[in-house]
Length: 137
Length: 447
Image (cartoon, rainbow over all chains, first blue to last red; front, side, top):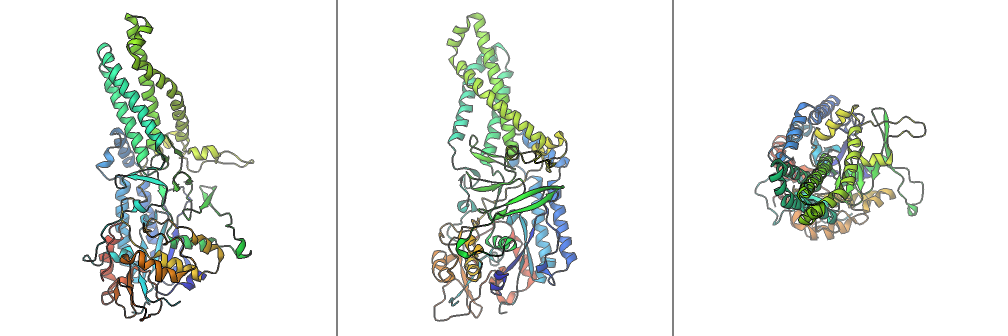
């Protein structure tokens, strides 16, 4: 905790939600409420956001007919079709970016928090910035 | 702590606050500051390993052999056998080259290195009580265990990337990157083979073995048909190109077929070469061991590997570098950090893709001397990219004079550059939905 105490008030403290690997390498974040957010955020808001995020990622990575068709089409065209259209995964990532922005606007920024789109962090972690407000305003 | 000014981050969210803000003379793309040992072409579209000599050899071998085949054998076979031979050969050749270039030129699934904040967070979580004296520092073995479908899998800490490697990932020593679902580093295709290009690699060796057999069969047919009219030696003399092709195909076909067979087994059991060599899922010391990533059936494994979802590239090579204030944070952390472990770690380059290209000192040796970071190197090297906030709240990008000495305040929050009167939450977020999206600009905050 040395680090935290040394950070001046304006420096943004960050909380990292780690990946949940219990079901394999698919993108999934832990829904355990981090202690650092106690009193700053309601548990159910947090859990709802993470659950929704996880379901969006699982939709992107699902082994459905859509992904199979897309891959087979790409294979038949010797993978030149990827130049022409976005993959299902990329479309989902755009949706996730939009979702994160909405969540930030509706829930997190009013509470002095901010979610960082996981794709910015290589889908390793979900970063939550604590925007500490007491910077002389 | 007597810094004379405050450096304000121009972190991404604050960047798009004002569209009329100053633009940098030249935008740096992220591939230009990429920390791994990779080679980039076409402004970041193409990504390969540094050593590409054997890749050119592979290309030459395939192109020359196929060129000889189309130039010398196909005309004869098209007339005497069927016109379908050059058509099928051409289609196979195009597929082989397409999959080869896909394998070689795409991102194998590189996991971006941790940002300084994230690395510090991991460091804090795994910190062990420092019992030894600081002089005898040695990093403890760092592993984390996770349970995947009932199977215990060890995650190793990567000292270069500052992350716990996700399951199946491994660090490629040739390219200096952690690669997801790392298979192996293949010098023949001049790239790592990982999660994002394994299917192209597999289809490449599969189609190459078919092409090899096809050319070999056609060449033999050609020689035998010719030797019908004459004897075999005369046929060989009449068509020397066929002899060269036959020799090349004969010697390469065995290794290529062997490799294709091996990878077919791997695809069927959803393993990587890396895991197979290490015997990750073979029973050890009487312990039951299984592959937790397998889908259960061979058919499903094949479908997943060959037709599964196509994961995106995580390194955003063509995005623009957005300045971050990590060095300040670094120096500050180091100055406050008592633990020798953490300080030592921070001496190394974090390798964040958002580090500036020309800033030799930033992110590398900031530990231990925050004053130098703040007063010396940072403003000089990257003066244009940094704005400073004075005590009365005005923001500019001039280095404040030594005379007005405000208290030290570090700005890391994206909100700080926001004009204070308008600091409402709603408009801020609305304006920033674009800025938050990846790599959109390197514009600076208003003066």
